[in-house]
Amino acid sequence: QKEVEQDPGPLSVPEGAIVSLNCTYSNSAFQYFMWYRQYSRKGPELLMYTYSSGNKEDGRFTAQVDKSSKYISLFIRDSQPSDSATYLCAMSYNAGNMLTFGGGTRLMVKP
Amino acid sequence: DTGVSQDPRHKITKRGQNVTFRCDPISEHNRLYWYRQTLGQGPEFLTYFQNEAQLEKSRLLSDRFSAERPKGSFSTLEIQRTEQGDSAMYLCASSLAMGQETQYFGPGTRLLVL
Image (cartoon, rainbow over all chains, first blue to last red):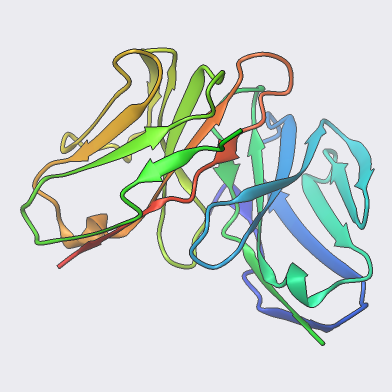
């Protein structure tokens, strides 16, 4: 079993929908949680960075961390076709440590 | 300001050949990471440097892999005697060892071993 699990999708939604992406993890020592977006054949781009439990909002993106359930989420409001990409969750034990990634969820937003 | 750059972007080689990739981090970043990503998977950690010191290596990093960061700036990742299973995207990331330490990724080098 992988340390970080993520549904691979693909997840297909109409433009304007609210998207919910999730990851579960097994190691309670993870303290830093990130979401990256990766377009085809490109490097990952950081979207959200969260320390410990709680919510963080940035524009159309909201990240939630529930450490008691070992579950993290990314919500995208008013989704756009340009949001079509693979979304990777990542986590680390300490700031600056190696990142452990989920396998990624492929999102397709249809106009 | 330029982000993390990697060279080459693509490399095709024959099994048994040696290959070397280069990563140039964001200029003031003192931490540099190498990851490997295969198709449909998330990146997997290989190794990382703080300045010129290699601080951690994954068990994924076999004896055929070696990484250097001689002056604490750019880094090279060499794969000797390549195998078909080495075909992957090799990603480099850098961060500043202070505060949040967000890792910023380069575009990757896509390796195909024939």
